[in-house]
Amino acid sequence: MIKNILKIGWIKWTHLSKPRDADLQNIIKNLDLHEMIEQDILESSAQDKIDTYDDCVFLIIHFPKYNEKLWKYVSNEMNVILGKDFIITITKYPTNNIEKIRQEYEAEIKEEWDDAEEYKISPYYILYKIIDVMYDKILLGLNKFNQDLTEIEKQVFDKNFVDKEFLKTILIKKRNAVLLKTIISPQEEILVELQKATANFYEWDLDVYFEDLEYKTSKILGQISIIHENIDSISEIFNTITNMMTNTNIGVLTVLTVVIWIMTMISGIYWMNIVNLPISDNPYAFYYLIWGMSLFALATLLIFKKKKWY
Image 1: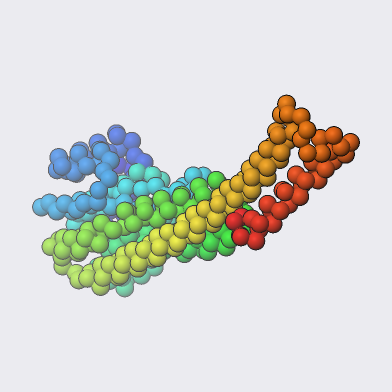
Image 2 (image 1 turned 180 degrees about the horizontal axis):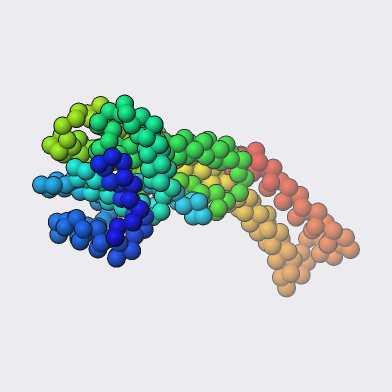
């Protein structure tokens, strides 16, 4: 027996989150699904796709799911089977959004049952609601993404040392932007195909709803492109500042090397087994040498400073 079925009028909506193989086999057996659909729902897929059959439409679509512990997005695969009087949604990872959509949809239809337009009581409109809410969630996530980047950009100029954790944060953000684009980009074509498939199965005109989804897809991809450019800009700034700091450190080390070399040369000469070196017989020779080396060191520092070599 298939559990977690929401019945609204003549429509049945079944949702499975991180299902067991037994649950999937139960669905396959009850609906007598095509072997291609059976293979797709039993195995994970990295690609979005849509297949149209005589009695149903099968859809694989991916949505980003944020892992707060890892600060990373993962791809949450959703399989959708659409029939004339049923919809089945299967997600790889648990998501609270589906249950929230189910509750809100049920409340909306019950409240307007007598006056509810027929197209709203259909699996195709339910699919629209799912994708629409998911896209709204992505847009909210992208706004948060932009706020994080603004804060990171401010922090870049406050760094006076090479911060590995900060670099790690930038790289994670870049990886997230790439993954988001990878997930959303194929959906433009999928929505066009889904709109055609819906027209073949359903008499009501839902074009305005699919056009809304296509608009949101374009908006999401536009924001992702801007985010990608901002991350590249921040990475460039960070790399430039890091290189400047490295060059400054190398300059300081060069100055110290020259200073120590002068002192080593002078002290080395006076340690040589040679008689009658200048001031070697003077009782204050040691102090003269110390003062002389200090003056040489100071002069070297002033020359480097004047030439702006460090």
